[in-house]
Amino acid sequence: MAQRFLGKAAVLLWMAFISPHLGLAAEKIPVFVSIAPQKYFVEQIGGEFVDVRVMVEPGASPATYEPSPGQMAGLSRARIYFSIGVPFENAWLEKIAAANPGMGVVRTDLEIRKAPMESHHDHGGNHEGILDPHTWLAPPLVKLQARAILEALQETDPARHGEYQAGHDEFVRRVDELDAHLRSLFAGKEGLRFLVFHPAWGYFARAYGLQQVPIEMEGKHPKPSQLKELIASARSKDFRVVFVQPQFSTRSAEVIAREIQGEVAFADPLAEDWEANLRRVAEKFEKALR
Image (cartoon, rainbow, N blue to C red; front, side, top):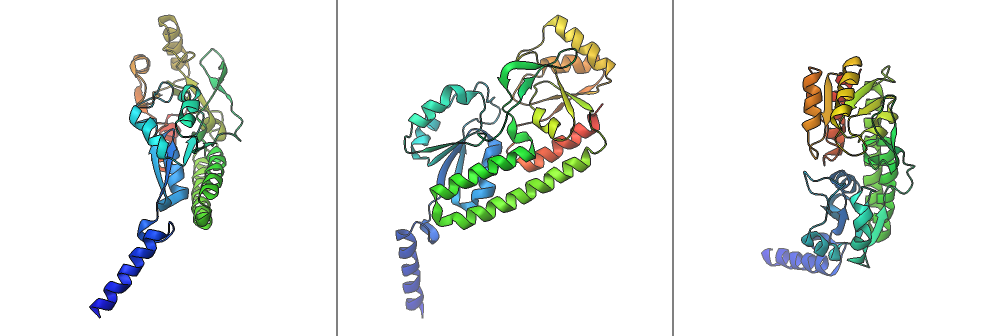
C-alpha cells in the first residue's frame, strides 16, 4: 500500500514538473505595475496565477519616482507591465519597455477620457495642459482598467482564460457593489465640497456629484499671499478638515487647519487595499462635506 502511494505521488510530481499548467510546478505570470492599487486589481483578476511587483514603493510619489536598479533588473523577467498614466511613466516607460523587449506593455488607462487637473482659484480652475492621472479612484473607471487587465492576462496565458474571466467578473461585481454604496452614501449631497491639499480626487468627486477644493497651486505649495487667500476662502466656506496624502508634506495643510480651527486628515490615493481604502476615505469625505 505504501509503495503504491509513493508511486502515485512520484507520477503526480513528474506531471506537474513537465506541464506549466498542472499542480506544483505551475508558474505564476511575473507582472509589474506602476502603483499599489493596480496590484490589487491584477491580483483580484489573476488570483494565484500572477506574481505582481509594484514600481512606486510605499511612501514615494508617482510624480517624481525613479525605478531602482533592482527593479529594472526584475523587469527582464516580467511578461507584462501594466501602466496607468502616472507622471513618472512619462520619463521612464520607454526605458521600462526597452529593459525587456519581450514584455507586453499595457496601458490600462487607454480607453479613459481624462480631465484637466484642478487648481484653486476664486471660482475653481485647472492646470492647463496637465491631465489628471488619478483614474483609479473612481469605481466606474476602474471597470475599464479591469477589462484591459483581463484581456492582457488572457492573451498572455490563454490556457487559464476561464479562470481570469471568473476573477474579472467577481471583481467587477464588487466594484459595482462599492459604486452603489458610494452613490447611496452621497445621495442628496450633490454639489457639496471637501478641502484637499493635492487634487487627486477629481474623478471620485465627479462620479458622485461632489467637488474637491485643492490647496496646491499648479503643483506647488501656495505662496504666503495665496495661503492667506486660501485661509479666508476656507473660513468663508466653513471647512473644518484639510485632507492630505502621506506622500506629500503636510506643512501648508497644517497652517490652514490651525487658522480655520480645523484638523488635518489623511486620504491616501495609493493604498494597496483599494476597496477598503475607498470605503474609509469616502466616509471621511462624507463627514467633512460643506
